[in-house]
Length: 313
View (cartoon, rainbow, N blue to C red):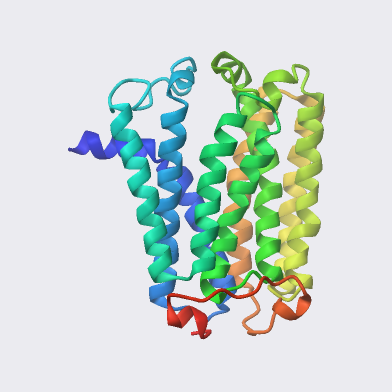
């Protein structure tokens, strides 16, 4: 039983899922502005986790033959034969559906719709694109940008300016994060037939340039959280200091394009995100009208199945 649970968690990519849940939770807290509902917050976290786990399982079900070719992935439960492929497909579908049910009954239809959309985009678009074009990373980044927006939508029933900024931060952050990872494993990706940019950009010039550009783009987009009133001056200053350190590592990777510089950038990206999100929660503006629909970027509120979310708690 213990081995079965371990295999399920590996299939679900639980550590990656934990990062997704973190971003959704931060989106919820920033949207709730210091007045969260325990029920809605818990539903948002659990529903997001189950949705992410289900999508990850279906992704591995789809890629099992290619994963067998890669040194990095061939010992995963499906390529190694520890889990039956049909059983994995059933787990993935049931887990994803469970996440949607939790979101539908615990949050609102906007959050549920976002979750359904990102599951379909991740499994049916991003996954097959990985063997067709290096642009798959952009589609994958869109998928990763949605969870904090889901959290915000769970709290407010809307997608205000703050939600779009959070999504933008996640989208931009993923580019240097994944490019650094793909550079480290570029030969392995090529062996599996995945057209990641570093696998086809042999000299790494474009890879390094894009990693640096997107690392630098995090500076203005994180600052936008403060200029729109979601967070305060403390976050503005701290996020720029942290961001400049990240840009410096992006510059080193751009210049050297070595395994060491890629590893440093990748590890820094893992540290960067929770630090910046944590700073945002610590220094968030608790006023209910901060970054609200009056800015013109809000999406019309959808009917909520959870009264607390619809009434502003």
